[in-house]
Image (cartoon, rainbow, N blue to C red; front, side, top):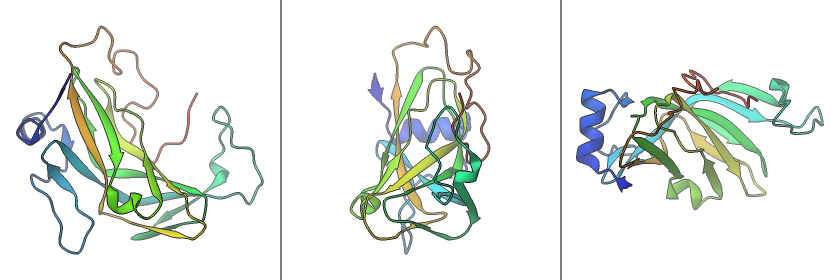
Amino acid sequence: MTVQNDKWIKKMSKDEEMISPFEDKQIRGDKISFGLSSFGYDARVSDEFKIFTNVNSEIVDPKNFKASNFVTKNVNECIIPPNSFVLARTVEYFKIPKDVLVVCLGKSTYARCGIIVNVTPLEPGWEGYVTLEFSNTTPLPAKIYANEGVAQFIFLKGNEIPEVTYADRNGKYMGQTGVTLPKV
């Protein structure tokens, strides 16, 4: 596998709409940076957040996860309660080529504040908005800024197309459009 550089990411995003909308350079200013970097793409978080709540004293069960465990907000700034988490989605829509696996790492700006970004790999042939999970590891409330950079996606090109892609097996998270809760 080879890590793909900015030239490849730019070409794939322009020609194949791999990332849309696409910023062909790092956007900074008074925002947490986003856009194309040397060997990855820094995606933004949208303004739709699902904030975990324990008001119902539910058990967190991935096979029977209840939407009532979340409060949904559309805001420019999301406050994550102490020792809790929030689900959100990327602003960008991704179409992953059949010979590429994508891994995601949180941005250092958030990591240095005790906010962990978790995303599972984007498999070959998958497409959709990426559901992001933000964990606040601190005993204090933490803030996430909508429409700003949150995570870097790194593209690993395989030496050939796999026998079965995510699209071929009709993966359960294929084509997700909003913040998607766990499915079995």
